[in-house]
Image (cartoon, rainbow, N blue to C red):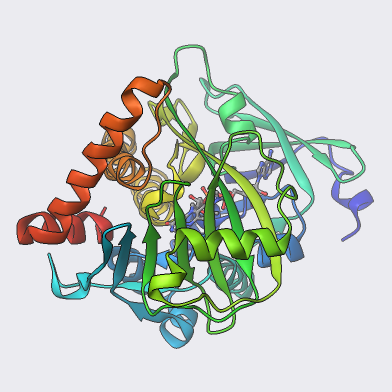
Length: 402
Ligand code: RFL
């Protein structure tokens, strides 16, 4: 279908219009499709873009189980790699937490987010699902009525309109769903005052663990993605442009902060992707505004320190799909009425842990006077994690759970 044909009608319609073909939107669309609910996904980007956008990689056991329940885990079962160890490096040395043996004795599955998105998309399309790429939602109107509408623009800027019974805002933190919220919506925010340079290197992992390095020059992180690709993070000054550091400087700084002189050098390779990530968190409350419902990053943004965002997106999509099916197929509106409250419980638990991780990994301080106090608190926290089995069990349970 050409774009011309696509926009020929004044208004298209579907039972549920899903904004965004990310983890949340595609999980939801698959579940609705399986239950026979008519839906369409509107996605701003191209198919190629969403299938190559590297982000998360650590899937929690509950996420894997949820995807398995719905027959969406074939790819990650085949290519995902179990992972259950993290290593903390500080100026007093390194210690490992084999979290597979702690808490509930579960592990992560490392599977790149773009591969999960590719699988979810292929499954949805194979079942006859419809995704309109290069279709940007501009606004959602009439959410307080029975037929909300979504105004869209195609790649050439031509307008169109969709009407629906429900609109699922799964279009992330800068999407149209958030922009269309009524003034009664609350937004709880936190700027952690920390910035990371996020790097993807064509280099094999340098350790068989997630590496968290706490250094007086700032945090450095190491996370395996595939046998050939490793994600690194380097804390940098707020406002640093992504291309400010040369590759040489990046690797030298990573070596320094990861105590390579004492613990062994990192395996270097070309840096193939960089982004600047300001660590921010927020929560929208409530997640339902009439017939507009939020899920994923549109509902709540988590700092990537806790590796929770993609996992929450799957959990919320599953809850939302169940509630929409109950309403639209079984005529029971109660689960949809409880959707926001149920999600917010999970969201705040995840926020609490992510916030704890931010404080563990950094010693941010506005004031020179308090910097040494915060640094000492952080050392005490790390020491407790190193020595207390109770603390380690708590960590494992929260690191893996939702
Ligand atoms: P997504 O994946 O951003 O998808 C939203 C989709 O909506 C589209 N869109 C629009 N479409 C139509 N109209 C509009 N107006 C639109 N505006 C946007 C976008 O193109 C996109 O396709 O959100 P979703 O589905 O809510 O999923 C959330 C996750 O992507 C996110 O929470 C995670 O990536 C967070 N995260 C991690 N989470 C984990 O669980 N484990 C990790 O290891 C992990 N690592 C990370 C991360 C996030 C990172 N970034 C982005 C800072 C590492 C990094 C570097």
